[in-house]
Image 1 (cartoon, rainbow, N blue to C red):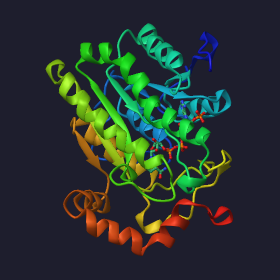
Image 2 (image 1 turned 30 degrees about the vertical axis):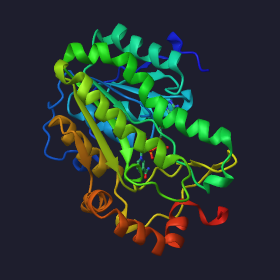
Image 3 (image 1 turned 180 degrees about the horizontal axis):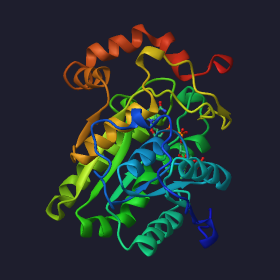
Length: 307
Ligand SMILES: NC(=O)c1ccc[n+]([C@@H]2O[C@H](COP(=O)([O-])OP(=O)(O)OC[C@H]3O[C@@H](n4cnc5c(N)ncnc54)[C@H](OP(=O)(O)O)[C@@H]3O)[C@@H](O)[C@H]2O)c1
């Protein structure tokens, strides 16, 4: 268990206004003050998609809390943000740990006095056959991807009810249909759909928005790793470039939909197509998966570690 300590809460206090070269691609129809003074916590935001969304939210005026487990990565991310002129807070916490999650939410309230938006983004990918995956890996994936969304949500709800804010879950197209060669990743993401459905019913009277985004392949950060069947960290497989989206674009679509309080978010035409296939023609989608089984395997399992 990782303790959340005061010295782990890092704050940047650098001058604003130094735009970064990539800024233009982040601005997708939302003005700079769309989220003015909203308090937004993005879990797992020291790299990847979480970092992309956090940056865009900063750009649109939100007061953003960045989260991750590793202090050095957090320091590097905060440095990157402040170079671009933003001043997020950073909280080191492991969302798969209930105590850390509780303290993370408490720290947000202590610093800002309220919480408007929680984005449950922290997640880990995995690769390998189910039958070869260790039970420890099952636990790690479910603890991070499912419990790591449930714990922060559980402790954030009273505050989000007060602000009539939003809770957004980052799921995956792999959460629409159980995919092969990624073991329990699909189940961990599919469960988030049930969580979102349940919370929508429970929190509707409190005017809380519950959203879920089904993300497809991303052009990952170079250091991105996925969990192999026996617990080793591997590079992700060979993803088809034509179906992969940049983190900037994915972030822009998600944040725009969050602004509109959309319930369900698909990020591309092929994401929408998969949604229709899985709901209306699941047999056709299954046939497609069987036919392209080998291609799917290389997509998820890096070439030097084929199962
Ligand atoms: N990449 C894709 O192609 C893709 C596709 C569909 C869906 N998604 C989903 O999108 C989300 C982000 O994925 P990504 O590819 O951007 O991931 P990533 O690049 O691997 O980054 C994951 C982030 O989460 C943090 N993290 C991991 N476990 C954590 C924990 N237990 N507590 C707190 N922070 C934790 C990591 O920092 P530390 O290691 O320092 O904790 C890191 O900042 C995930 O939910 C993923 O399942 C991704």
